[in-house]
Image 1 (tube, rainbow, N blue to C red):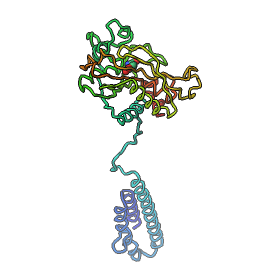
Image 2: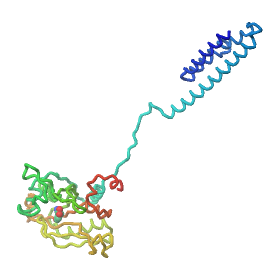
Image 3: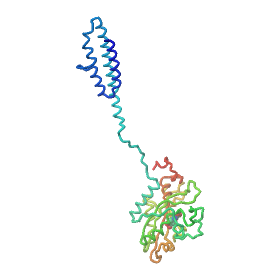
Image 4: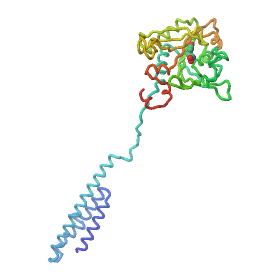
Length: 339
Ligand code: DAH
């Protein structure tokens, strides 16, 4: 009797430990402890057949085993319940969505989009031109003579084995392309990347952004140009901003001007940013040279035009007080995350 009790105990404990969920554990419990047909229950019921002398010993052992089995079942149940709880928190079947940091637009792109909206609202068409450009559209068509210093190898990135190809040095290259495609009247802006063969430093970069604007049509005048530049300046720096235009030579405009706005930092009083002048140089502009109109397929006796250009990169530097132009193309996340 004692022997079979011990064997039963061993078998029961093994099965309890091997029960992998609550249902399996319950089956084991019924198998041994069930009132009607439990194996241990049956032994306990038969204690009365054990010889009287052995009965107390056997009875005590049977009870001990019963308690042990009950305790083991309880313990196993708690362990299984705890496991189920953990599994419901970590559901391996759930689909995995990686957490991504959302980016922001590059500061130059932000300024570009903002100005595109502004010009579109004034009725300008937004157009594009290629970055890999021909010598013709970038220089010759813009009245820049073959011996003009701007064509010098030090300024322009030419394409190896293609003497007439280059990376555009200015968005003015879009002017004649657009005139040829759309004719007059036309008012359009083109913005994007420009490239120069620069020895880079805090103020010079090989890649930067410009925005070019032009209007061609009958009776387009210098007054229109002044009006547009005033509107841009007020849009960028506020209603009190003033524009100052001074003569400057650009081969593709006549007359050509250099446009300045009252310094947004000192309101014209003089500070380090404007080098104590009170003015910030922003625009190049003028009335389109007859040679350029002619290259664009337009009759300079019938139509006239105005053009202006400015550096988007420079605007972003002024707007955010950035003192090193190289940060813009650096892909430095610490810099970019600020915008
Ligand atoms: N393309 C000139 C530059 O890169 C800027 C410029 C000056 C554009 C005068 C114009 C203009 O349209 O009329 O420096």
